[in-house]
Length: 261
Ligand SMILES: C[S@@+](CC[C@H](N)C(=O)[O-])C[C@H]1O[C@@H](n2cnc3c(N)ncnc32)[C@H](O)[C@@H]1O
Image: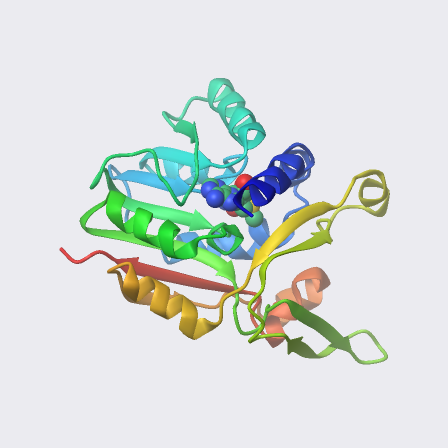
């Protein structure tokens, strides 16, 4: 399972990087990342680790906020693209290829860690959370975003009125122990011709219920201190129909958890 998941991400990395940098990861850029940063404690001057950094877009934002960043991702192609961006515009970020479930860093190396939409993609979330806790200094925090376990389980369908407005979100398979089921999709905000010319991403799902996530965080020795459910307001939902489903029910869950001081 681990090697299949890693291979899927390596296979996604080239197109994902190109499309994310073209602005097609609209949920990330217009909603998820801005809310994540709005709820981030001050990080200027702190040593941070970004786990599952992808092409490094969010890592660069953390560095631009003044943190001394290190970042890790399972897919070598993501790391290559992230390193190329660092060469082009140096921000002092150190990128390493590696597994979130076996971080290549000594204990207590970082003041904080982030994981933007990556922990739910990892086969061993228990180990990934334990590893994040291990590399945090006492009193350090881990802030992460995941697909919302309750409103984005393996089945989620947007139900619309005849005029196209969204009536409800239908969800299912919440209690299914999904471990590595591969979903295929493209960034919905990409133009039709771009979507047609690209292979879909292959994304292995490792779905956990909300209570399972809480149990995993507690088992890693971390204390939850913040939870958030980003959404657009009514005006934005009208102006940006692509994001409007999040006005009805959240797509993402944000959690900040702290290692005891
Ligand atoms: C949805 S992408 C998010 C990328 C990036 N954080 C962002 O916000 O643009 C998930 C990322 O997690 C990475 N990933 C998946 N499994 C991993 C693992 N076991 N260890 C480290 N990174 C992993 C993938 O390669 C991918 O870059």
